[in-house]
Length: 131
Image 1 (cartoon, rainbow, N blue to C red):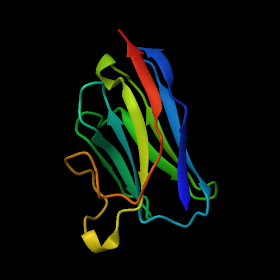
Image 2 (spheres, rainbow, N blue to C red; image 1 turned 90 degrees about the vertical axis):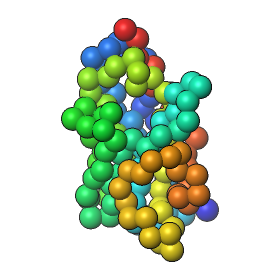
Image 3 (tube, rainbow, N blue to C red; image 1 turned 60 degrees about the horizontal axis):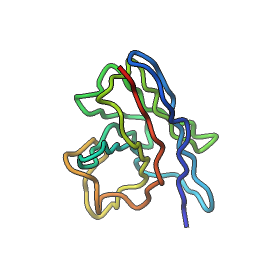
C-alpha cells in the first residue's frame, strides 16, 4: 500500500513563496504520473500541475509562470514550488500519484476534481495567502 505524505504548507503574504513536498511511505514504485491538486473553501478540488515519469509537465492556466512541479527520483519525492502567491491560491493542496493505465488519460492536467483518475492521494497540506 502506498501512502503519500505532503508537507511544506503554511501562511504567507501575497507575493511570497512556499515549496510543497510529497513523499511516499510504505511500498513505493516508479509512478507513471504524479500531480498536485488544490481545494479552496466552498469550491471543488481542481488540478494544478502534473509531471510524468520522463519529466514532462503540465499546468493549470491559473498557475502557469508562478508554480513549478518537479520530482527527485533519487528521493522519490514530488515538489511544487509556489512563487508569486495570491490570496486566491489559498487552499488545501493534495498530491496524487499514478493514473490507471486502462483509462488512457495521459498525464496532463484535466478539468474536474480527479476522482477516479488517480490511484493514490495524500491527506493535504494547507496553504494560506494573506493580502
